[in-house]
Amino acid sequence: MKTSSRKFAAQPAAHNLATRIDVDQFFPLPRCFSKEDEGQFRALRQHIMASVEPQNFLERAYANEMAHLLWQVRLNLARIESLTINAREEGLVRLLAGRCEDLPNLIKGLRRRAPDAVKTLEALLQDFGLTQVDIDAHAHAAIASEVFQLERDCDAKRDQFDRLVQNFEKRRFLIAERLSRLAETQRNKNMPPPPPMLPGEA
Image 1: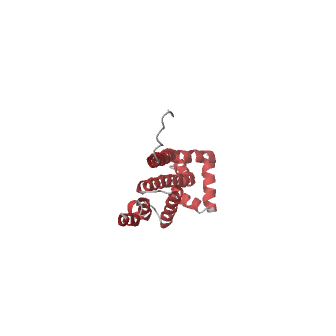
Image 2: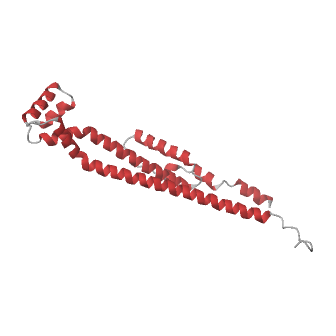
Image 3: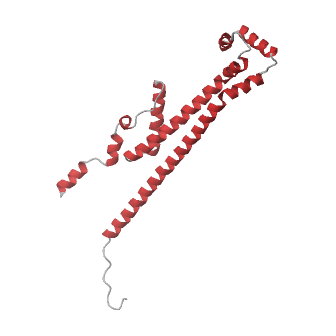
């Protein structure tokens, strides 16, 4: 009996095995565009792992999925920011298409903020009775559809994340409740039987 106890004690607990599992082996990284992105995703996932302290492989899978959802939201927001920054240029292209003979070179000059390109743009706007408001309107139209889709996807990913957290917490609660009932049953089994009742005590 003692030998079997020692043998059992020598076996690592299931959650200890889970903590030693190579995360990347079972949960591959998402498609990243640079080593910097890869490092940022690993840091995000490690932060979530440290926050939820997964006790087994399934909980580790929950934490990994949380990281992937937040990472996708991050990529979408970065794309929206990039679109917004470049929207003015796209607005100019749409607004001046057919109105400027050398539009590509004008755009290149504006990127460099060349004084002659700025003067050319001002002259074109004046000739056609256009203003910065027109540029902004075309810029918004150029990106509105894609930004709308990205924002919808962000909202969907955030909803998925919230549901995942709720399911994770519910699972933890159910396990704790089950262990509590098990402990209570065990305590009842170990309680000594009540003393026999003497005649006349009923």
